[in-house]
Length: 298
Image (cartoon, rainbow, N blue to C red; front, side, top):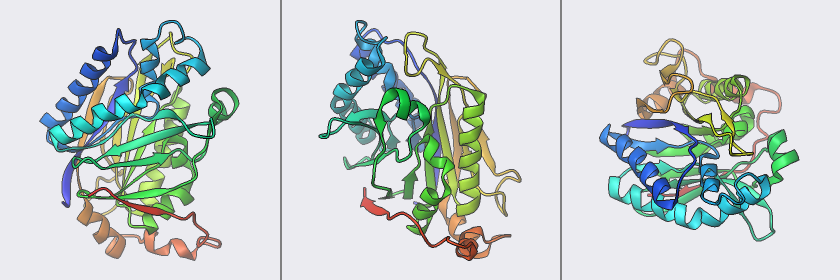
């Protein structure tokens, strides 16, 4: 598939009465994206932290709320896998802390393909809050996912602000970079937005930002959420002058949709008004890039 529609979520953090309320909410969101013709739905970073509200006794405690959400991940993933199969969409589920065998938590985004295969990308570079208060550890592997839609990569929030990560993915053939985000200020939102747009410019590809929105005073993790979802491309021929294909109204609960054409990525990388992707290697030190693992989700 070359041309398809992407849905980027501006996803509200809600206090949920029970698991059924969560399942109904996610199902409703996925069904709305599918009804609008989306082939790929992108949920935000740490959107799964709303699941901490299912345990009123611990939801106000940061460490215990992380434990609660991590324990629910198998159930969350089963729900998203079923929805991907039912709708025929690829779904990047909201990222969540996952407890690993070493006892550390890592921020994991999971990409569900309609055929039942799941790809996982951990966040690699931790923010100060994740390091100093959450005690979330960084992941190690950088991956690019081969899908029926093309090659997709995931740079979770802060990761999008480090160009070598995206560049390594571009070198591995990534055509669309997904940037799920969670920021508690407009400054944070703009840092990630500027990072996402810069990665689209450098890689001559698409970048998709999907943030959490709204207030959740009950949560010590995601109490304030600011941002706007968007789909970006490089400002070049056949793209919008500013590179913004679509952007939402900041703070509003909504999907943002745009049609992308991955054939344009190949065209611009070969014969764009500028050749950022081709000329990257002319920077001193530009050849030192992280290793990338290709994961087949087809």
